[in-house]
Amino acid sequence: MPEPPRREPVFDLERRSPTPTEPERTPFDPESQPSDRPRLDPAVRFALYAVGALCLFILTERLVDRYHQRQALQVLTEQLELVEESFEQMSAEQAARVRATRAQRARSTTGQWLAGNCSDWTRSYEDMPTETGRTEMRTHCAAYERYLSSGIAPPGAPR
Image (cartoon, rainbow, N blue to C red):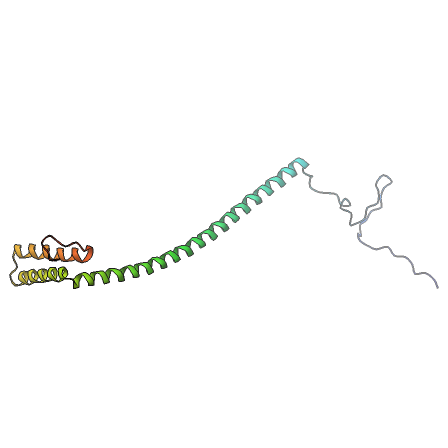
């Protein structure tokens, strides 16, 4: 059986035959096509790569710092919410204690006596609004309020 004729693969239709001083090059050889642009000096290429790498490094550092700042801010926000909840709870407990203490002081003998003085002077001022009535009403009601808030009775109050 006769051998089929050999066909060479066609990669480049305009392929020229090599000269005796020029070796034959394949179409996939990077040096087969002459470069139209001038090649950069290796030192310049190295400097460009170094600048590019430095820019990437700085950008990465900034992104990582932003990430850590955001994480820290989230943690601080969560802690602040916990502290606020704790303060609200303590504030509610403190308010309940203050109300109980004020009620206890209001029920005491001194509290009832000071409340009576405040109400007497208030009623007197409402019946006849005078400067003396207003001054005495303010004095006795302030003494009653001071006793309820601090527990300190004015001199002469019953114990």
